[in-house]
Length: 300
Image (tube, rainbow, N blue to C red; front, side):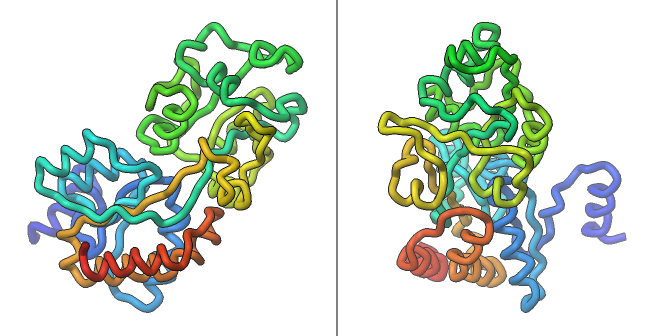
């Protein structure tokens, strides 16, 4: 048995190696961008024989893989942080940081919830802040006019860039959740959980609501100038500003020496507008995608 065959067998039996190990194009990162990236892969592979493997275990996992040379492309729902960038620098791994779409983090409740018609940023903090654990336990503690029903909080896990972004913007405490939060590994499971619980509240990517609508509705957020519904218009106008973000794709510069990586990455951004819209995100300008393709092809 060859070393490669033995390694593949060890992975399948014992889970010792990543499925990315021997792919032509290795992708690891955000589950927020899973629908966008996998759709692009499926369409691209209709005309390509490249072996493209992708795992969507979270932005932080993707950056770890990037910085240890285990991933070529990292979809990321937040910018690389200082400690992550240092880990790459320590390994002498440089990368391109390319925006691919706008997104919004959407606060959602069950459709049968008929009291939470809007929330302020201060009220979001009262719900999600770690110090609210065991103190804010019912909806009417958030706003007196709301139901006296118990508050059930749902969130992506702390490997998620969405959680990092939301907790930083709402709580000013990046990555910290209150102790009674029910945690799920992907946005679809959050939508399912809230669909089944009238008292639940959580947050997901705007794109997740397109992929799996469920029995949920977005809660308009009042940032000080009236309640704003998260949609394409409010994202582009910046009315949903504090909870609007860019989604990124990071590419290891060393990986761009592989023609398979350059070809797929170029295809992804050449069709960025189409895949962003299909996945429920808000596309960037045509000029932005053209510039991204130029950077991929020049490696700069």
